[in-house]
Image (cartoon, rainbow, N blue to C red; front, side):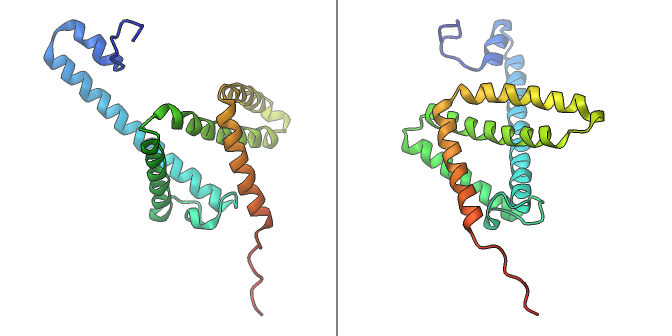
Length: 178
């Protein structure tokens, strides 16, 4: 609001209004809706794949996704339930996204940290030195972002710790009967 947009946070809409062409405004709005739709679908599909892979590799409980690592109906059902919980939490806080968004951001930052840490550990060969250096750089950059939301990062770390503790104390699959 202080930047001259008078509370209008749709920057593209604000830029197009200067041309005073209604058809251009509609075209810009249509383009913006397509971008939001496509990015939301990409986010949901990648989140489903990540969840299924985490279940396959034993990082999350088996009830959370398809065990073969492919995102199918079961995995997307769990994601839909998680989204419902997020929206319910936002509703409980009077729709205050500023309460929920940093927590979600911290969750993603921790996922990236874990993934990049795995890349740093994996790429130790001399031929992969450049890839490892890029992973270290990205890891440090993401760590800086995670420190920008310290309270939310600690909450997510605590939840991650509880899940890890549960996974290490849970009995493993029983041996097949002979």
